[in-house]
Amino acid sequence: MPMFAVTLSSAVLSVVAVVRNQAKSLRTWNEARRGYAELCEMDDRTLSDLGLTRSDLRDASATGYFGDPTTALAARVAEREGRRRFARAVTGPSLVPDVDAALPRSVPCM
Image (cartoon, rainbow, N blue to C red; front, side, top):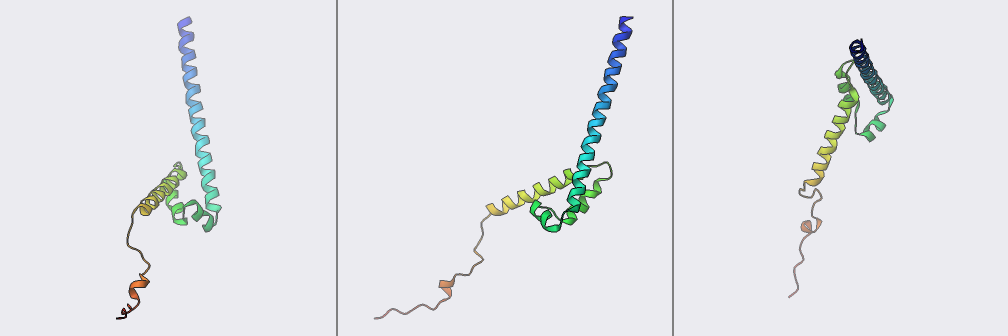
């Protein structure tokens, strides 16, 4: 009889663990959907401050109903920030013309 009780209790604990994991997944999914809905309600300026555009929101909606659009959006922002850091690190020629070179040179007095 004790072996049956041990087996039954381990089965019950396994079922409880599965239910707990599913509940956690559902809660995480719901929070992500709520966050995505809040992002959709923001104006373009606020989205720009966050590093996002409306087209990013449309692209993130392609994750499907059970997907997490916020993960796709976070990846997009990280990708852009990485490009910005790289762009700052690269040096190039100045876009401002050299004004002194354009002025006529004076002839020294003899």
